[in-house]
Image (cartoon, rainbow, N blue to C red):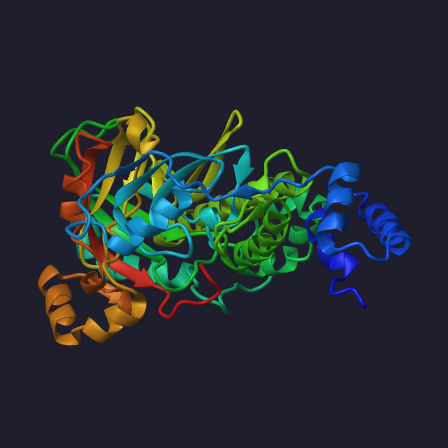
Length: 450
């Protein structure tokens, strides 16, 4: 009677082993020598000869998770459900959900997760090292308001957004393109020309370049509480190169996780930190971190030259990144580092205030804070609920010059920044300045995953 099994199918759990060829050959030979053996007889022999393969599985109980906001009132329930899935991973040790949290791909935006000995490309996100940067300018507020359209023109002249964003050859140069990892890492090597083309540009969607007026709430390096200042505030990341690197390693992580684990949902996969692929991704992520920072520096430097002004102070932070601390990897996906004393930026929406803050080093939040106001709904739902009349009325009443805004990126699409700040002030951060938007430039439609 013909056997109802195939040897290679029975050996599926051994395919990741370096000696799989040997295992397959010897098992086939054993089966030939034992023509009446059933499938369980074959596997008993394999287990005795080569050992049984054990697989990681999702935990029944979630690792500790802190919520900084009430479910339903501040944080959507579906984001909490996503985060609890993250916390059931076998290497998850602790996590937190910020008050701006909302549904994302796998891990929610506003989520912070610590994984022991593992790094997850999807928990970093598709816009690797997306970040916010502020340059406080040596411009008098009254003079700025009088010449605001001139400053807006200068900012529009030096910025470019979206998939087609680039500059004439030689207009944007930076030492980051000389980093050795562009050639030493296989995936970034294929993307260097794209990165060079988009150097100094911004993503589409919710990325922006704003001119703001700061109202100091506390003293900060020469600026006294109650003083005002003008600043350039930008939000963008690693552009097309970062998106393609993320896409590649999300797929690699999925393949690798299947070799060592069963029952892990799509998008929740990881790479071992001590594995070559984990180290490759870590190095590529760090290169994209340098590249994203260079993009912001170029925007700020070119604006200062075009507008005839100078920067007094520059402050920045990443919010799509992973920080390695010993054997623990802290993933912040849409969350801002808020170590004790660390300066950070929490943008509002196109028509509301943003905040300059100082971290309070809250251990329960894994030393993190929100990265913005956060959405209540998907982009599709935000477009459906959009009121153009209400939006225009608000922007006119606030006297905000705005360019490139899409319906899913107006202030109507976001949570109340004052509510989000109220949930973390004195707990996660100390507000140092409230920043009011005076010129808002955005990239319009979303593009390559920024």
